[in-house]
Image 1 (cartoon, helix red, strand yellow):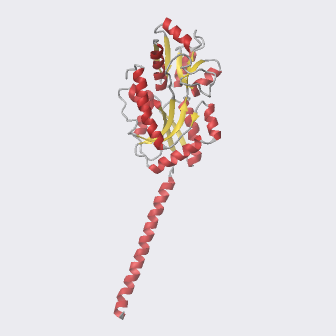
Image 2: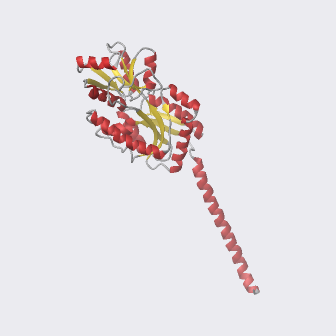
Image 3: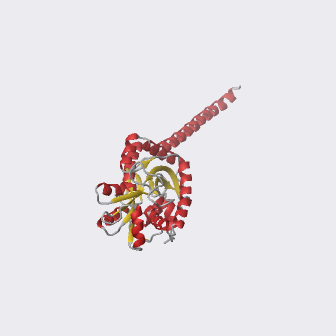
Amino acid sequence: MTLLSKTFLAPLARRQSAGKRMLSASLLGLALCATSALAAYPEKPINLIVPFPAGSGTDAAGRIFAEELSKQLGQPVIVENKPGANATIAANYVAKAKPDGYTIFVTTNTSHSAAPWLMKNVTYDPVKDFTPIARGGNLPFLLVSNPARPYKTVAELIKYAKEHPGTVTYATGNSTGIVAGATLGTAAGIEILPVPYKGTPQALTDLVGGQVDIMFTDFTSGMPFVKSGRLHAMAVSTAKRSDLVPDLPSMEEAGVPNFDINSWNGYFGPAGLPDDIVKTLNTAINKIVNDPATKQRLAQLGFDAFSGTPEDFNKFVQEQYVLWGKLIKDANITPQ
């Protein structure tokens, strides 16, 4: 190599080497930024939207999940109640939220299985407008009555309703209560009148006060009234007895065939929630339901806690949508 070649090529080689180092440093920086972005969630408090009032079963269980999620994720999880319109107010709010993981929805079959069949003007799609994150569990329901009423069993209730058509009223604070009451009327061949409420706590207050006669209520909300003697429990709404109240008959045992209505609970984000955020939240929720101490706390509320994968939950939601459509049609409920 000539002196002239060395004079021109050496600086060029140094510049190329420096350029490669700068490119490598830039790529490394981008990789570190990407890793940091993935690891950063959550960087601020998360809002957990509850579609029912404070004091409802979903609210009580949701607050335990919020407390435990905060521990798992290292950020506050703030419960925000948005009750009303069969949970559709809250569902609409979440469906329109930014899919960044800071607005998540704990809801039930009310918003995702029943409301689209019960209401004419539901503006969200329960499948397309949400990202399934995880199941939370089930909330068993009880058939309860005001203790002053002359019937103590389901058979006595049916007999009384047949002898006094159109006089028995049932309170409803959510879609499960609406569908269960209408199904009882259709299956037993009795005329009972629905009295709608904005939420379960208000309905229970009037049931205790004697303004209404019976109600299907979640275990969490209703059992304290049963234990105190202010309400009388007649049956559970499922096909089989519940381990939570083993002495209570199922509706089928009580004489109402093919009666099996339960309330599921689960977590969603808006449509388009990134996969890494879904995975983070799903992992945290599965840890919560598998923790013996937390599971026991939830069981004391009457909440049967369990979870699974987002894919399993997505399939379940679609199946439940079809099932509740059939339940509502079979109960002869006309959309309002």
